[in-house]
Amino acid sequence: EAAKSGKAFYADTDLSDGAVLSFGEGTTHTAVSINGSAITDANLGSASYASIEVIPAVVTDAPADVAVIVTMTNGTVYNALVTPTISAGSGTITYDAENGVLILRKATGVKSIEIIGDMTVKVLGQNTIVSGSSKAIFAQNGTLTFIGDGRLTLTTTGNVALYSRAQTHDATIRIAQNVKMVIQSTGMGIQLEAVNSDRSVCYELLDVASVRVTSTGVPLYLKGAQYSKKNTLIMTSSGTATFERTSKYAVVFLEKAEETTVVIKNGIYNVKTAVAGLDANAAFRVEGCAADGMGSQIDFTVEDAVVNVSAAYAPASETSNNVDLRALSLVGSSGSTMKILGDSVVSVTATSSKDSLAVYGVY
Image 1: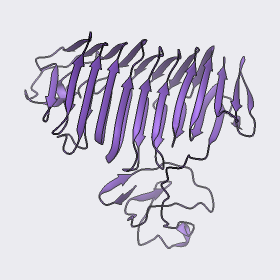
Image 2: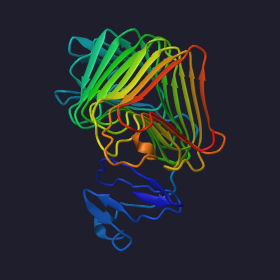
Image 3: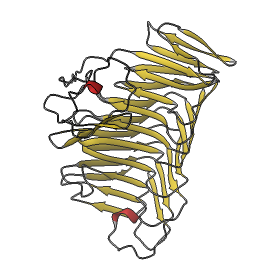
Image 4: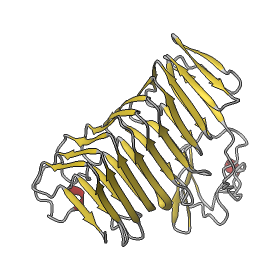
């Protein structure tokens, strides 16, 4: 971890001999560790850490270099740029380099797929990725678009099933056309994370695509670095989306961005947790850079959609103004908006003595 102008950054990676660990210009390296061994100013120049240099980080708007790594459950690892056709159980994984499309055709026996840069994933037939304790799909620094008319099932234990990171570039996950995605995880379901305050993240569910996420951790989580630019959630599919958490706390959670936009339109959207517990976050929770919404504009719009938000909480002794105990919670600053338009039906239920809906800030 490193701190720069009071903003935190995080990176988790494997280092080999001769690797260069790069922090941004002007960064202080006060809480850095490799393999659990702390690195401090005092030992930075020692022989054990002789390969570490502090050099300026490069943040650019030019497209990131593309990489696609496929790991099978038997341990075989393929670079799809080198091996464009990969046998995957009874199906195949094919990389079309000319068009930037990764085709999953009835693929099985896959443990994980790692993607850097912009990539379109075409889903044909029934496809499964069973990742164990690893991330099933790990994308970064680009737009990851799922198209096709097939089904993709992601199963993971104690990790994130579908993850995208914005570091040097913005990150978007887009599920479009008629793709059906099913996620089962004892960790998180879908997470987009900006690890650089200059970056933004976006999740889009479009066309007639549908998604069902059942997880112990947060099913849909958009997380900015403190004061990152923007979190965007756009769900305009005429299909159905269900986000269900099998434990307490937040189900759909957007936080830590200077600006947050939520657009929900056309389809049926279910956000629910059935597990009671104290100190539970709102099931659908949108907040800005801090819990008080300081410096954060939120624009939340529902149009011609059915939205069902439900949460089971034990009332116990929580204070009546505790924002954490609502089903739907918006915490924004001056100028924020909440709009329910057209033929929308919004059902918000909290099975406790607390209010179902909390809107904080100036709306």
